[in-house]
Structures are given as C-alpha cells and as structure tokens.
Image: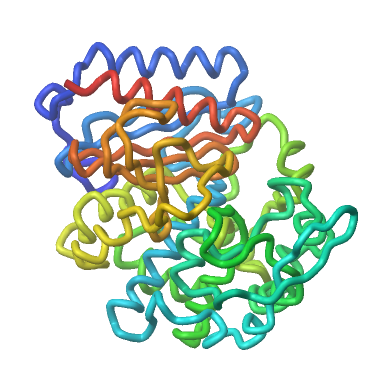
Length: 394
C-alpha cells in the first residue's frame, strides 16, 4: 500500500501509539465542529514510511468534504522551496551564499538603513553589504509592511512592493528604493528576503522563478499540483478559509489566480497539496533525495538545517519561537526547552500565513505536514498539531 508515492506501514511498527493517533483525529474533528477551521488534512511519516494520513471537515465553508487532493494556499511554505532551488545553484558552483546581493542586483549596493529619531526617519549607510546568506536566514534588514508599525514598515506597506500587477523583477526593483529596517546581519527580521532571493535565482538561471521551480523541484519530485496559480480545471479542489478578512487587512493578495500570475512571489506565492508537500518534506527528511531522485547532497541539507544566527544576532522577533535559530530557509530548534512545544534539537520547519505547517525531525527520523486554511488560528493549530503528534511517538 502506498500514500503519495511513499509506502505505508502500520503505525505501531514505526513507533507510534495507534490510540493516540485516533485521539489526534478526534481532536481535530472537534476543532472543525467548533468552527476553528473548515477542514484539516494531516500526514505523519517516520523512517521513510507513512504512518498516518487523515482529513477531517470540509474543503471550504458549506462543503464539500475535505479531500486528499485539496489545493491550499501555502504562503510562506514557499520559502523553503525557493531556498532549496537556490542551494541547488550553490551546489553547481553558480552561486555563493557569501556573495553580495548587489552582484546580481546592483541597486542593492545603494541601500540605506532607516534610523528613527523622534518623529523623523533618518538614513544611515550600510555597515556591510547584504549577502545571499542574509536573504536565506532573514538577517538582510528587509521587513514586511504588515508585521509591525515602525516608520520603515509603514513605508513598505504604502509602497506595496508585493504588487500583484508587477513582475517579481519590478517589485524587487521597488524594494531597492526603500530603507532597510536594520543593518544587515544584526537582527532576525522576517520579511521580503526570500522574494529577493527568488529574483537572484531568476537572474542566475535566466528564467522565471516558476519555470526554475518547476524544472528543478516540482517535476523531479512529482509535485504535479504545486504552482503559482491554480488552473481553472482544478479550482474546484481549492480549500478556502471562513474569511479572508485577516489577509486583506495585512495587504495580502487572496485572488483566485487561475492563470500564471504577473508576480511570482518567492516569499509566499505557491499553492500546493498535502501529497505534493509530503513529497518535498520526504526529500528533506531523506537527506536530499527520494525514490532515487537526488535534489541536494546530505551535507548541503544538513548545512541548511543548521542555525546560521550567531550569538550577536537579535532573535527576539515574535515569529521566531524561543529556543530556535534560523538556517537557510527553515527555523531550527537549538534547545530542548524554551519553545511552546516539545521537540528535538535539530528539527527544522516553517509554516504559512493561512495555517499550513510542516516539520522534519532528524533525530526521530520523522516528518509531519499540516494543511489548513485558518489565518486567525494559524499559530493555535501549529502548536496543537505539534503537541498531539509528539504525544503519539513512543
């Protein structure tokens, strides 16, 4: 028996407690009944085999039932995929993470850092250039316009540098005209870094980001439903939240894109399914390969899944859990305590603004994927799912 191209094994043979997996299903079904989300799809794998796969609730408010091939807006779970594509270029000697971003985008050599002085915003020169590594670990100084109300964030929001009517190249060009929030390398600041990384990938490859990801990641891993848009023929499989109000307030595009968009956002533009993201997570858990298809070397993947934040980096951002650092595209657990959930040092993960999440635990040879569309309850579901899955492992 197989599941999304991976073999299935009875959960008890993989070190799970079946009754506790049943409890996971029951509790998630209860969340749906309590209207915390229209529906949920979940998968847990260990030692390369699927132990658990379950969907509860509805595809969208009012039905039909949640399906195994539902298409979700994964937003920031796009970032690990773009980071993997960039590291494939590193493995080919076509990109160095120590490269200054201005090598590929000359306008980034002229960036300034916003300095708040009373009610005025001053500008300071860069102490050092932004590097590709800064983009991958979110120490570039770039921010998002919706994650705070600092003067720089207000400028970013007003400039709408994730404008769906402009190309990635045009949006990144607009980013280069605005001040950074911090000096490169000093603060972990979640933001537009992976959009800029996506543009660097486009420049190195000489192709659009969508073409690069399709050729390098989606086709080799058989991720047939992952793209920057959902074709008309697949729109009936699209999962929806109860409301888009939270996303709209943040200035995030929520349109039903049924054709290739003008803006292919490396930071948050992809749609995907439980099955497709399982294939991607299985590749990560398998040391960079699945079914004999090698995407990255084990050493490169281990490097990506290591903490790249040195002791001087301010990591107090509300989106980076305590007890964690950040690698090249993923958050990385550095401490067995401090975090809001149990877990093992070395596990790496990320999530999306609509509530989707995944993690890979090398110590436990385990990965898990959560697909849900509930922006208001995204953090609640991530912690709940992590706690419930952890409780099933012997």
